Image 1 (spheres, rainbow, N blue to C red):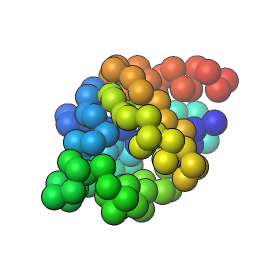
Image 2: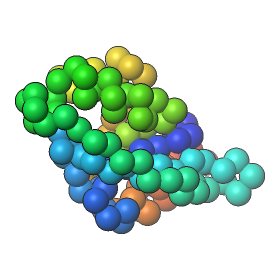
Image 3: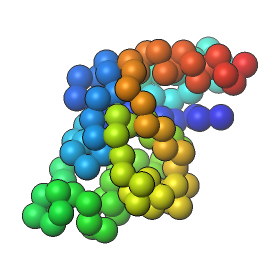
Length: 112
């Protein structure tokens, strides 16, 4: 089950950012006693655009360190090579265009 999830979002409502440009991640954690997800925090990612619009190993390591306590990342769009890199680091990657609230409800429903 996904216990801690990062959503790439510019507004905290929609999963609307491409990984290569994402600068804000909204973090939710599953609350065992209430059987729901609670918003924990916003995490800002300041990307080095000097090298390949943020698709360099330094940026990948920085985003890994920013999100390493999460086991799932929901993103609007992500490239195959970057997705493979993050999966190798232990993340589950989901490419979707939806509301954060709807995804959280679906994750809870699937894990009943």
